[in-house]
Amino acid sequence: MKHLERFVKLALVSGLTTRQLVQLRRRMGKHQLVVACFPKSGSTYLARNLAAIKGWKESRYVPLFGRREQELDETCIRREMYRHPTIHQVSQLHVRCTDQTLTLARQFDLRFIVLYRNLYDCMVSVVDHWRQESCRGPMAFWTKQLLKDLEAQGISQLEAASRTVAPWYINFYLSWMEHRQQLSHPPAFVSYEELFSQPQLKSAELLMELGISVPVEDFHRVQQQTIQTRFNQGVCGRGRMAFDKDAGARDAIDQLLRLYPRVDFSPILGGGLESVDSDRSDVREAETKAALTRIHCI
Image 1 (cartoon, one colour):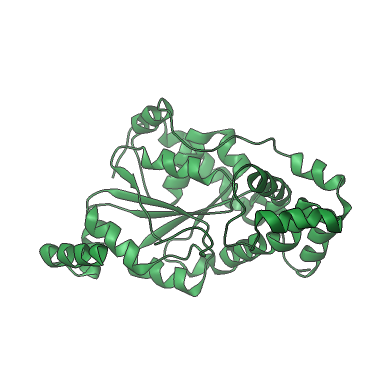
Image 2: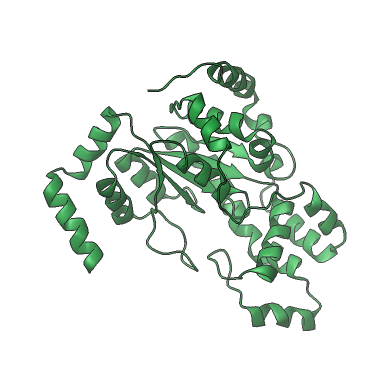
């Protein structure tokens, strides 16, 4: 109730409607950016690096996490914009491109970075997370006891993740690939492997693709900072090795992918979006390298 009262007071004091505030922020060149991402894809690292740029802030566009689907919430977005009306905002969420996503994207002029990773590597990282941290999440319902029960059935946790969590990843991937042209600002796609091969260059490239320019000196400043996250850069390809040793997990993924015979899954199976969008990648890289040689800000 206190949060609601504070929101109402802020709205009354400002004297602006949501639409007016969005328009004002657009005129000031301030942006609302969402990092829509696979779990275990280095998204916290990316979001906090962007939030560390001068004039940027990490924002929370959902009321809760835990087992709740991380669907964008209108009240939360509005609250963040009223609280911090003059700075860029970035929110990192495991959010699919649903009708709700499209509606709020139009209403609040949201822009999106879509971060994905090799599906096999993700499943291995999910199991690591279950063992080392928590199995709570919206993708599938598990508890520590339920995971222990798998042992009696002769089922590995990797197979369990492949049968129950991997479908959410496929859902995420298909939703963004299917609806990306319906957004006013087409999302910028990047893989885990691409991002961490050249973090500074790729971050600048992503922002440029979305029409957001940042002084190169600010990227250098962020690069020198220590960003606090749980991120540990994984070994690309270790998922394949794990699946080669686990027939049940391998069959689970194979059966899932066979349900979509016309879909190109190569971006999340070892390739990249170049196979889907190759005509633009070389141009973007050349433009970004040129931009990083000068300081420019809108």
